[in-house]
Image 1 (cartoon, rainbow, N blue to C red):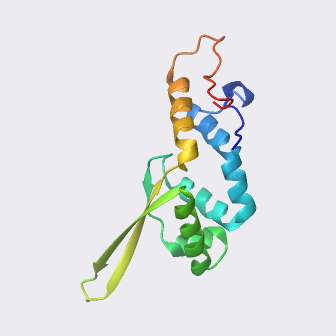
Image 2: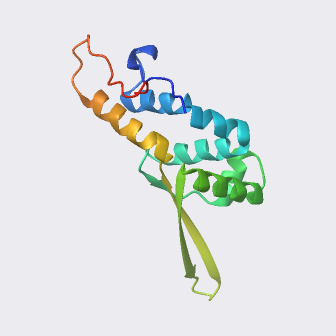
Image 3: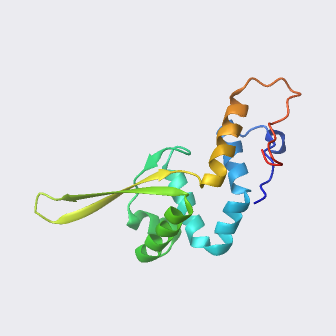
Length: 146
């Protein structure tokens, strides 16, 4: 796997640190491979990211809401969610409950994660960006990657 090295100077200065990391994720080979395999899964992932608050956060949009945003059916969204879960981009927390009328329901919460191959790199990039900048620092490079 090759990944574009993280370079905070390659993005415009108006982007926040979290936005710079997200751009790096979007340029990763794993994300590009997901986009080639299932463009719909990428649309659903971006919708989930829009509802969440970054990597590690939880969100809980309904399948109907995700289908409306992705302009597709709820069954297609369900398939995309399964693909994202298998690939490691999200963790689905399924909660079953019964309404006051006795009807069984299911509520999903989505934990926004990264595939294992990107988790260590994301941690390093986050730690590097959290340091005060001296202007001459270079991002840590490990094994040709970040």
